[in-house]
Length: 433
Ligand SMILES: Cc1cc2nc3c(=O)[nH]c(=O)nc-3n(C[C@H](O)[C@H](O)[C@H](O)COP(=O)(O)O)c2cc1C
Ligand code: SF4
Image 1: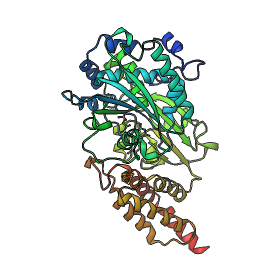
Image 2: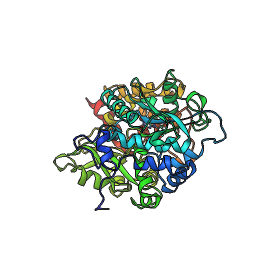
Image 3: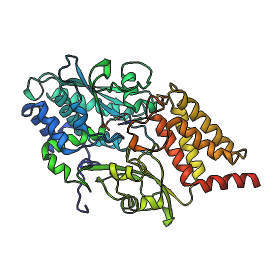
Image 4: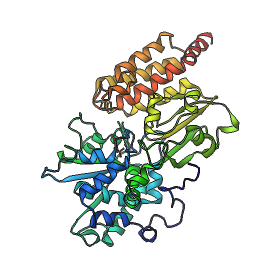
């Protein structure tokens, strides 16, 4: 994998890379043109299905399979939504793609829209990304002025437009159902699934929600083929180029593109330059703050693809890798995670609304010297009541309407279980003080 050349980020940092002229000069829209003029919708779905492209938004669900759930017989309009909410702490890859190569993502959206017979698509972008939203508006205007969007794109009979919608800064609006509610102009509250959005999404019509990075892969899959894509990475079951976001205790934080399945240690120590001053690695969150933390031993040989990270008891998620060295106070780190989720809970479900608030109260007690040893088991009990045990085999988790419950319960649980001695030491120190 050492001779890997960046695919998705090839043009990052090149002046003018966000413009249509630049993109066209580098074979831009060749794949979309082919998809629109030469391929049937089913053929596009089939190629993407064969590529094994897994969604890069967090769950890793195969994109082609998801598209196949759109009921073809439905007379309702079909919608595509690009999820550019990117709210998961530790994640900052989608912004990079939007900033440096918005046309790659727009081209992916054209391909996906054609595949599902969508004529109006949306980009739901987080409110804080004001500059990126303006950049996207400019890119879409260029497309409309050049027959890349609008009526009869590329001289075909296929019409498509794409609109940008800015969110208002709520983490939960990254969850696809909350996102759809928000796009409809309502409060961003997740809906119970099923029905899944592919059957009943935006305005109760069939809707596909895909992540920025997922969509950015599509032009390359159409141009180079499914076999080429499956050949990138450690395993054909979870293939392709992958953007990994490295933050925390590393010397060179940033977004690194590498083949799926690259070893976590390679990403931390080679790409990101290792820990500051060569300090000992203590723990790693591999997939954004909702992914259970791994110890240094668990992280050492881990391949960063969906099945490998899951087998290690965590999630690749959004590939937001948060590195913690030996100086990290794991109790404070866990408190930080719990506090974020308490702030962001939408409040619909009692276990999530009350449980997250309860957790922060326990942590407050814990960290200001008023905690009790039994609080440690109480934290585990509360997390179990919010999100249950970490058990991927159950497939559908669920004591709550959306997976946010697990997103808070699992990481907090993992912190306590794996670093229990620190939680206990915290109490004894506080007691002694
Ligand atoms: C609480 C929560 C927050 C989420 N935030 C995001 C997000 O910011 N961006 C994103 O692409 N997906 C996010 N997701 C996943 C989406 O619900 C959805 O699965 C994804 O956008 C589908 O795209 P993909 O199949 O291309 O990965 C979130 C899910 C949950 C439960
Ligand atoms: S789990 Fe939490 S965020 Fe999700 S719907 Fe329930 S209250 Fe809202």
